Amino acid sequence: MKKFHFGALLGTILLTLAAPALADEVVVYSARNEQLIKPMFDAYTKETGTKIKFITDKEGALLQRLKAEGENTPADMLITVDAGNLWEAAREGSLRPVQSKVLTANIPAHLRDPGNQWFGLSVRARTIFFNTQKVKPAELSTYEDLGSPKWKGRLCLRTAKKVYNQSLVAMMIAEHGEARAEQVVKSWVANLATDPFPDDTKMLEAIAAGQCDVGIANTYYFGRLVEKKPGLPLGIFWPNQKQNGVHVNVSGAGITKHAKHEKEAIKLLEWLSSDKAQNLFADVNLEYPVNPAVKPDAAVSAWGAFRQNPLNLAKAGELQAAAVKLMDRAGYK
Ligand code: FE
Image (cartoon, rainbow, N blue to C red; front, side, top):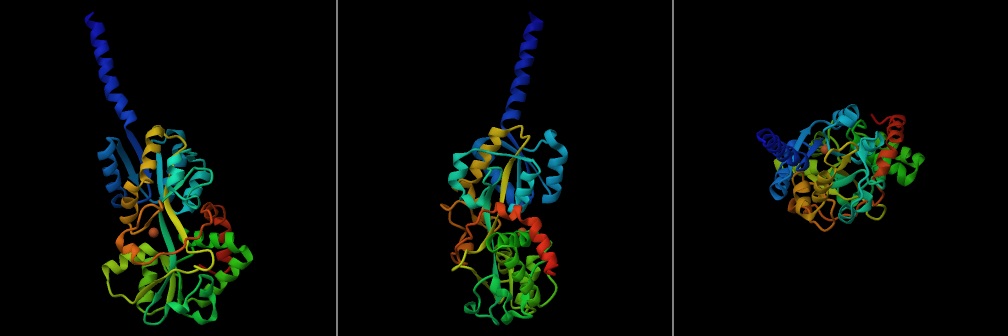
């Protein structure tokens, strides 16, 4: 009798210890750094009681890790930047499709995988910046026009090695075909004021310093820079508004193929797309919410409204290899 009771009691204790730990937890691998994700995760845990364990690392390292761990991975969710990286994770078989009416309602179709393996959670616009002392907005029009002779020796670009530019060129291939896209990239290279920069911030600083007059960067780098150094002679321009719109990309997430807490992870993903979480996710990095019902941060709204290119971002992944080869042929380093 005594022995039986003890066993039953022990079983109950083990169950109560084990069951909630299994059910009320989500494990996240994130290429978005801790300061950008922790505030949201804390809010989610406070609201739902679900604990979130996460590690942060560079996107390449996390993709490798997911692949190497295979079915033994503890990760339920991958968060990373750029549709090119999300597409790559799906191609490697590290993600699983998710059918969710909440996600398809909250996230516009061009910002998520047509196969439902990844979903954009914030929008980053890759647009044109100019030196306000040397360029009038009326002189600017399209990405393609940055290759026209009037910008000879006046253009700055970030390195072609960065996935942001690979995605930009991949989307240009999707829009114009390879031959035309190659012409455009060659014309940019011919207009460069100096070698491509290692990052967007250094490029924006070069424009502000007058080393060049125009360039292409993600808006949040501009936001961070002018927050730190107000008064820089830097202007923002929304190109291609009469054509296909501004090149956008996403940071986003997918559920891993071998997720052990699938239901909980999907719940978290749905919450991240909700109006409650969208501001937290976008504002913390001066990005745009993917959910059209949610307004961007006031500082971001002040840059003005623009039309996004509505082409599906899966193209950025599908055409990434072609874009890398094209940039190499065009002499864009
Ligand atoms: Fe970035």
